[in-house]
Length: 460
Figure 1 (cartoon, rainbow, N blue to C red):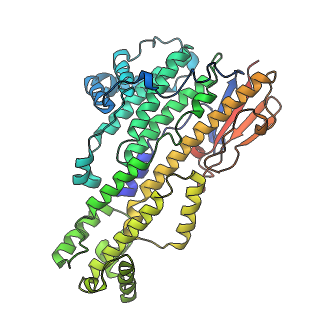
Figure 2: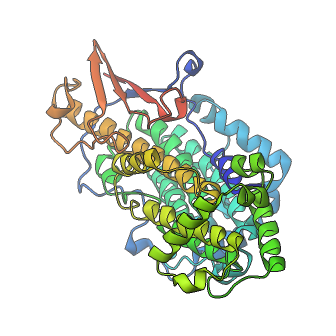
Figure 3: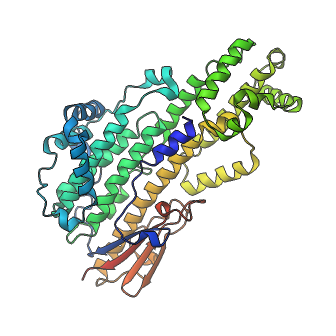
């Protein structure tokens, strides 16, 4: 299986909101919320969405999450339990409220609550990562997803029953679990962490639309930005790249047998990548390069610091492969250096570089996963920012006789810009309904998963 395909499959883990029943009519995710005006709580940070220091205990949460999963195989992984859980997650809140769910998953999920409040997450896989590279098995990550789905059921049940303090406790557990997955040294871990954070946002969204829900503007504002960092995952990807390319020697000439073994490894690693398939494998791709390309590859390696005299002793295939490794490292670091930028800034930089770059054997195969994760991360950050705006609107309505602001500039608290577009969210009022929209990233204009539309009305 190719690396790019693996990430596209993993991206399918991200759940979509399904609150509206007419989403097929337009390429957007329509979310209808009837809001009750509400002031900020006092003290302002009475409600938070991540565990605070006074709730924490010493320990490694990962061990306790895994212990919870191993001890509760039936509840978490039994087919009947799974089917019931999926049914409860799609059921309207009013139907959920009459189900006997007050003690749903009690012993299992209490253990998860405790794990989420431990202070030293350590996945303990760095050494295996250095040995296995891309082939490192990751069964523990998928178990976390099953645990998160069970927590999501409890979250929705607490919202349906109006137990908002309990629901916020569950939100803390889910967001902490998501961030602990963000500490996993793989981008797959990041993707599943982002998926779990989205699972928490779904019932949080529903809760904001319930009568009596406290205003969570400051709780949302105090969440880390980004909620799930890509840095540990990208650091791990650098380690994986070194592992997979470790047999490519830049110190001495490689024999034809060593080159053949390395090319066979690349064929297995790259799988069905389009450029490789069209060329008939990595060997065919190398054979298609002419003398002029080889001279340019050697010059680029000299500019990167390899001695010319040494390179002149290397077989042509070794020079070409070293040049591809160099290009992979350049493009990898060009991505890594943008991790601290806003989405719109990072994507603009990447777009400008893509316009002047040609194809690259290793980079095109090994880096698409990082772009998938960035898109997923930006979608999550946009959802959180949109909910901040919704709560800012509730604050305004509470102070202005139950009226929507005509423009977001009228709101008294800071309103975030759209992290995807780098400009204010689209907002308009039509009669008694306000419409709030996020902008999709380039290329996703017709993808409903990246086109959020909140249709807001006020409960009088």
